[in-house]
Amino acid sequence: MPLIILAAVFATFAHCLEFQFVFDDPILIVGNPFIHSAANIPRFFSEDFWSGIPIAQKSFYRPLSLIWLLTNWKLFGADPTGWHVASLLLHALNTLLVYLLALRFLRPQSWAVLGAGAAATLFALHPIQAEAVSWICCFNDLLACLFVLISFHAYCNAGGIAFASPPFSPRKKTFWYGVSLTGYAAAVLCKEPAVLFPLIPLVCELIGPARLDTGARGSSAPGHASRVPVVSTEAALPARPSLLFLAPYLAIAAGYFLLRKHALGTVTTPQVRNLYWSTEFLTIPSVLSSYLGHLVWPVGLSPFYDTPYQQSFSFARVILPFLIVTLPVALFFWAARRTAVALVLASWTLVFLAPTLHLGVLTRGELVHDRYLYMPMAGISVLGGLGIAAIGRRWASAPDARRTLGTAVAVLGVAFALITFHQSSFWEDNLVLYSRGVAIAPHNGLAANNLGAVLLGRGQWDEAMALFQKAVEYAPNLFLAQYDMGLGYYEVGKYAEAEDCFKRALHLMPDDPESNLFLGLSYYHRHQLPEALESVRKATALKPNGAGYHFALAILLKDSGDLAGARGEFEAELKRDPNHQPSLEQLRILNQTAAPALPAPQAPR
Image 1: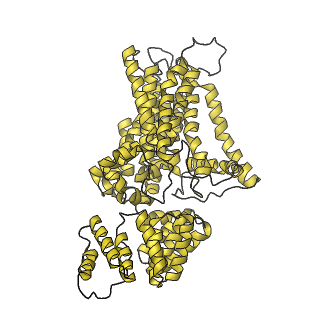
Image 2: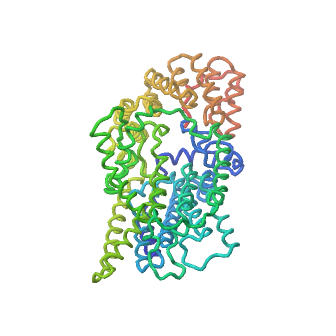
């Protein structure tokens, strides 16, 4: 069964190996010197995830993810194929662990393999997973999920929970407990939501591991875990030091927060909230209903969605989405009250879904992303597998029940695989991806801006500028929209319009080096040399290793008559790139007695 499912995974996502770096991939991977050198490893633990990239949020502390990026860079460099292979292997490993997790709670039932296969199929092939597997930058989600699953399996082994083998010796239990703690420590260093994992063992400890035991160690009563109610009138089981058992997990969480505090200056998200609490609470129902819709009817998926903020109480946009979400929540609670295992899995889903609902710290306008469901899908999938096994037990006396149910699961898997193949195809390159984004979310400013940037690079100036105008209209505080529009005007020589755009961009992000650079160059072309020098000096100070920055400053200094300063900047550019031919040529000119007129400075490429 797992081999069949893994084969389906590779068949479904194999075409992703031909995809390009898209979206944030070029910024985070190809153009990020921070992850290109092993000498930076100590800095991985003392700086934020996007260190050195000014336009990114400084909210993430993920040193192990940076080590993953460094390793992949050393192995694959700028070839996206190897990166996609790595992501696909991570997803395959997670699928196998989900299969084993379902099997753990279903053994020794006769329907265990089919139920576990259904769980793994749902996790592996549901179209909601297309974004996480197809987009290289989503490796954070895959990696954190891998270590969380390892940690939970090891915790269950250490606690003797639902394991189809003779009990472990104390030494082996200690070993598995150590594996669980190590897995948790690795998970929190990959992505922030993993820090909530100790809540899952806490639920298990409060329930009592004995109630989660499926009777697999020789019991002839199948499905013990699926029959024992959480609320029981039986005498309580003997107390055990559950909180003491969880103390090391809490110590690891405390250590993580201390490291995060050192790197980011705060244990929480350092950026300023961009929503009122009332708006956040009123918007959560529509966000949850969107996720539910994507799970139940997974078509029309996209990297961007139009999910508006709700600032007033209304039936259509607040009460109705709340009522829609109430049904699956009620089913969760119903299942959780009937079975102890279902309570654990429902807790898993809700715990890892909760961080995605903290809307006030998300990038404005970007409220819903399919990749946020990757870790919650592990709990949802195993719950689904347990449901299939329960249906099988109920239909056990019916003729050909196993074949019928198995066929239904296979048909659903094939349907998911076909839809997922189609959905993942949109991640082929930026043109396809952003065109899809604009088609699905026509009022999303980031989608419009990103498609405009791609079209500008392809020489489609009119179409690009129209999209930039829409981006500014939909998201007036979007820095990239102002910056990219400025680039569009600069390229065609409309320097006054470019100057206005770069000024607006700098109002939103004053320390962006490229906006300062191009503002200075726009000043220069409009014969405002003092202003040009001020802006380009600031850009060079902000990004001293930027390609062409010192050269542009040198040209301005030369034009202002500061030959000594110009010589120093040309030499600084040559320190960055000893073969920079324009700087070599300009130094040669400076060394001549009569130097010809210098060309206008060019923007760095």
